[in-house]
Amino acid sequence: MKRIILPLTFIGLVLLAVFVFGIMSLTQNTSIDLEALNAANQLYGSGHYNEAAAIYEQLISQGGRDSSLYYNLGNAYTQQGDLGRAILNYQRAAQLAPRDQDIHANLALVRAQVVDAYPEVPAGPLDSLAKLTSGWLTLNETAALALLVWFALGFMVLFWRLLQPGRLQNYIRNTALVLFLLVVVASLSLGSRVAAEYNQPGGIIVAPIVTVSSGPDEQHTTETQLHSGTEVNLLETNGDWIRFSVPGDAVEGWLPVEAVELIAHSPLAGELSL
Image 1 (cartoon, rainbow, N blue to C red):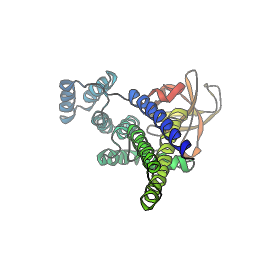
Image 2: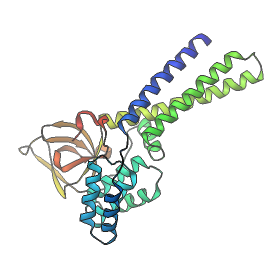
Image 3: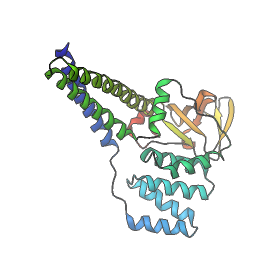
Image 4: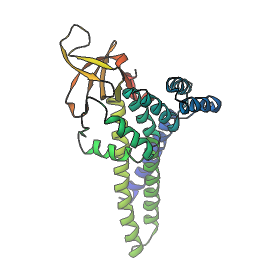
């Protein structure tokens, strides 16, 4: 048994390290033009919200990826009454800084103004775990935590093998069992978050109002209408249309692609990248 545990631990460590490297390579930040950022902040401070938003958007299009940049852009759209783009950018800011209470406070204030309010209902234990950890850790931090705990587990197993039977070995064994449980929890959280982002990435309706169709064209039966700021999960694409569902699957149908924007700036969204 001892001969099996250690190789499996180190194999898992190598695989997880490669995975973490891949995740981090997708989320690298680039330098931000501070002069342009300061100009945008000054425009925002003087009440020129539209001009400020245009500069923030330009900085993002140039590769800027910073929670304060998305937060400021969300504030600019909030001042203009654009609930959809405000929520979109607060969500993006929260992905990069999940423990920032100002972001969550502003997000909650704007969400309260959305016409179509659908409570988010996790589909199962893994979804609940992913939602819980996403409120505290970024995807990179979750991956790094899983890697760290896995490494600690491997060290404990190695240490346990070198000890003679006795009280210390029992203590190390119990510690290894706790670490193993932590590895399982961290890995499940990481896997469920990646799977959700790849299979059903989150999006925000940014059109003021959009008609939901029962099929991917305007000839199908109209189901209902949704308003700016409604949060949806994207299921598939068909030409210029996307199939979506709202949290809890209370509404499902088809929308024009231009009515929705993905929250995540990541290739993990796969074929649903808009």
